Length: 377
Image (cartoon, rainbow, N blue to C red; front, side):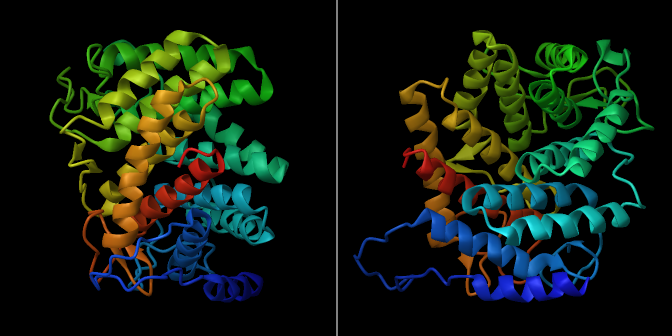
């Protein structure tokens, strides 16, 4: 792991301290956003503060908690893929290689796990890592996890992938949205008809069971207490993001307009529904697991926004919404010089900052660089 220690120190020195104004000074000077530089600063800061070079994974927080948590590792890998695609720098592919070894070891020598949603996050990230590296070990790992996820389907509540391998009655958007995205992407990559059939089956169950047909609002799950009840009180950003992603991937895989229409319905609701947003900003959903929820919605809303199939008005509407959140986070809610982001994108965090909230911010800034590349800002 000595190589990765050297790499970590090098990355720490790469952060660009991209602050050209005196924050809070009251100056009328307009702030000039360079989203590529901001993305560089943000992603390098995440690596410097959270990457555990000896373990090959990302720590739980910025205060020395080295506990290994499986599902946030997937989003760190996704951010490395984002940065690699943006810069074509070997820095990120080298870190991906360290991730592959360290995360597998941290998870007991395997990428297979107990929670189907957690495996879905990681399989989707590993398939993206395959896209940028063309290293077959990523493809093999993603396919192995996908095979295991298929075992989570059962006919309780009419179908769906279970939350975990014990509570097989508990069905939710995190497991099913991820599985649908993964299945559709597997089909797009390798043209195995059974993967598309899986994607369609999972999508149909999700849409008919957990999505409000009038508004597109996506609920978290059903039968959580083995009582057949839909959970209508958990209003989370990431559920909206996962369904947007699933609908978009189904459109990409099939070309059927109805899927794009589904994605648009949910996306338009997600940027206006007061269960999700206030004053144009995503809600504070806390640290811990909730800290990552906004990042998921940002990722899939961004992918929808840059899709060539989307109409120009929708592109501009979604891009402006994301830009408003990014500007608030960067100017009002970033702790410097560490570049730490909390769960509230209108005020800076203090003290401990979890990996999950840091990842949501890094995802947002990588998304802004992608939107800028597509001339949407």
